Amino acid sequence: MAKMSAINKNNKRIKLSDKFYKKRLKLKKIIMDKKLTLQERFKAQQKLSKLPRNSAKVRVMNRCQITGRPHGVYRKLKISRIALRQLGLEGKIPGMVKSSW
Image 1 (cartoon, rainbow, N blue to C red):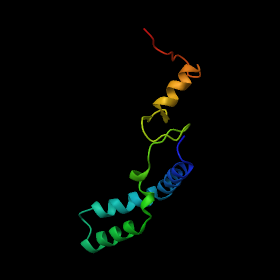
Image 2: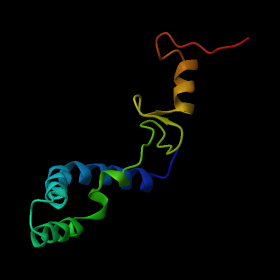
Image 3: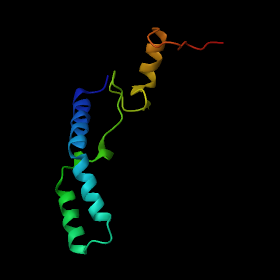
Image 4: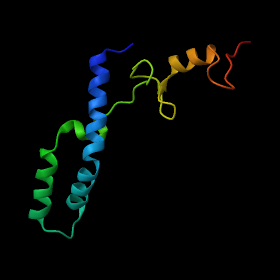
């Protein structure tokens, strides 16, 4: 099990990134628009830099929903490889059986 502080920090980042997603997207479009004046683009850049760092989508880490493990996480399932194997062994995932030969 991962530290609760790390899990809570990541959950806070997820909430912030969802909250500021549209605002960040709008500012980035202004910054990348070459038709606008340099001053307008610079102002948009300053506004973007004023936003909290943890509101960036890049700072969110993929963590296991069961254990909080940060490595070896399947994106579609949002479960780590270890938790997936454990659920498979317990028979909680339909169609999944432990391979043995």
